[in-house]
Image (cartoon, rainbow, N blue to C red; front, side, top):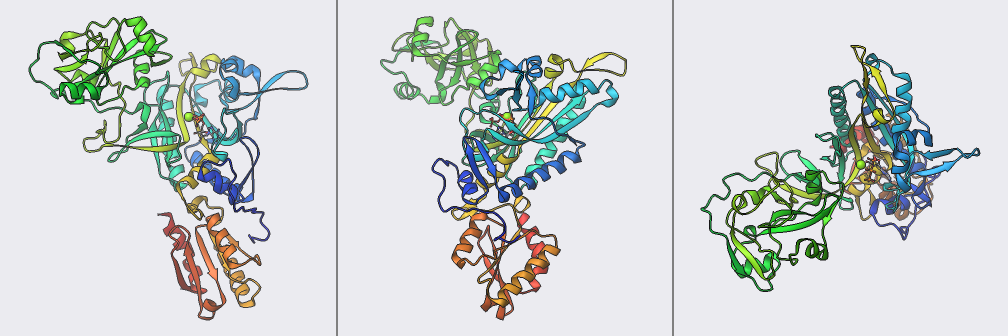
Length: 571
Ligand code: ATP
Ligand code: MG
């Protein structure tokens, strides 16, 4: 492609509302333009990248026997009413009416449409399993669209749905999908983690998100620095304490006066004990009433773990007024001894003896407290937050690292949620009517491209990983109107194209500085700079965008080495 012919409206300035670097650079590099909040036009350079991402996804889906389909973006309300999501989905669902007043929505996801099709066409176990996918525009009326196409309202997603005769078959496809997703993000050249995610009511280990590690990520990911365990930080497991952690003799329970000392730090200093020997009692409000959670003084309670443990719909720390009203204990002095609430203890507390707790009255604490002797515990479980440096729960040598991540993909076993509500039945080998088991699997195409920029850029611009770069090579003649330079550039262009390498030739009459700045902004992996002096000596300059290292090479001999150089950039 010649630069003068392709539409790349680059900008010097970033848009004022752009918070993250990918948004800034995609606009500046002329890849996208905003039309309305969260709604974008994708320009030619941007589309070249999205098509590359799509093609990688397509190949990996086909490899595991996924079949590409194309479902409508406009979906009748009836199907959503049948699944029960018409009311549940809330304002993210864009609802529209046709000329007859019939209600529709613009699909934010496609479980209803696909389940409707499959229930009508699939009658026998012989037609299962079945994996269908599409690459399609979705619309979600996000509360706060931001970060360019990373969190848009209209965006491209690959969504796949699988249908199975039983759980075992669903799990098999789930594993294939996990492999395919890993390949997709590896092939896109991204550093990512497959992260344990909340599997809701299904349970088990059958929901994972794929997170690209980047400082601008909205999620916190806890992962082991030694094995491949990774989890959303809010669900990350703590390593179980060894049972013999603290087996000293039991002291007597003793009330001590701690005037005005409320925080762990204050009490620890006042009583000259370490914070690990103080147990915090956190009172939380939930749809199941008030409950108390015990964690060591140097730990924090994880409300999500406690909520899942007690099977609550919602749960959050109670405010001081509620605590005082409902327990008759002043905030800051609550303790588990004699507390009239259901008490749940973290496993680290379960392993302690002779610790300090609040004494359920002002200015007093207990020392010498024992879990088994002094309190009634409903359950001892993992209910604390993990932090960086904590030991890995899966391997013996690793410790937790915490980084921010961008969710680019999500795989999920749905079980019979939709086949039940929408009556997707089939006949099993014994002629018995059974419900299909389903899985669903999504990748954001635009978000993946944006995440690639978040991970690969410098102050000059984008640094595309080779597999998703809009072009592989950028030829930059210093002066295209000079005959020798033009001839060499044209011939390099033709030879590389014959090798099936995608080339952008900057044939514009602009100053060299402008062309080099644009080249660095667009981020094409390899630049070939062709100038008259070097040419006279039979040389051209090769510059690797990523390292910014420039070297002189023999011309035209170097052209034969370009495929190899591009391959080397992959690793
Ligand atoms: P998030 O928690 O970021 O809102 P989600 O959990 O709603 O995402 P899914 O329903 O799992 O997302 O959708 C699958 C994939 O679609 C996501 O992993 C992401 O890559 C992409 N995606 C979701 N919402 C958006 C959006 N608003 N803009 C761009 N891509 C999106
Ligand atoms: Mg998700």
